[in-house]
Amino acid sequence: MKELDRHKAFELASPFPYVLAVTLDARDRPNIIGLSWWMFTSWDPLMIAISVGHQRYSHECLEHHREFVLCFPSEGQAKDAWLCGTKSGRKVDKFLETGFKPIHSKIVQPPIIEGVTAAFECKVVNHLETGDHTIYIAEVVATHGDHERAMHLYSIHYTKLVSIDCKGNINFDLKY
Image (cartoon, rainbow, N blue to C red):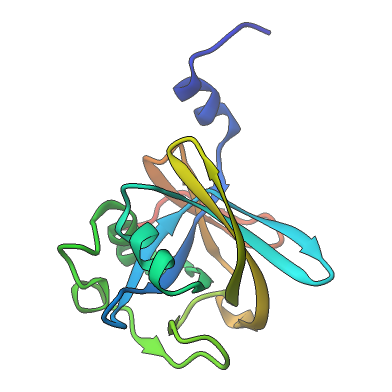
């Protein structure tokens, strides 16, 4: 084993599950951010953490509204999911720019993205400053899913998306 720079190490550690977090801005407009930095942190109660850069518009949104919906985009949503991870919500209304349709959440204010594989409604209960990111720790207050959309997206070194289902089937040839 040899020492690597961080970019090579991230590439070797890929793929990472690619998710979309839907937040609300100060004017209650929804915003979507693409993330690979997230994890489950507790089973009882069920909790999730997401890591968001301080300069990101979604960071500003989470400071105003301490809620988000973590959505696992399905295979057919790769193009729109990629846009959400590469453009800022400060300049682009991502629901208007993409084919995504918002649907009402059961408990939190930010909407769910229609057609995702799974969605977790979350209320932020704590946060931790870590260098240039904030980790938002949230309790999951409702869960949703669609067994018909089993293929969801994974990021390879933040340069490409692939889809993998829960049985290990992989599609490398996504069009986006």
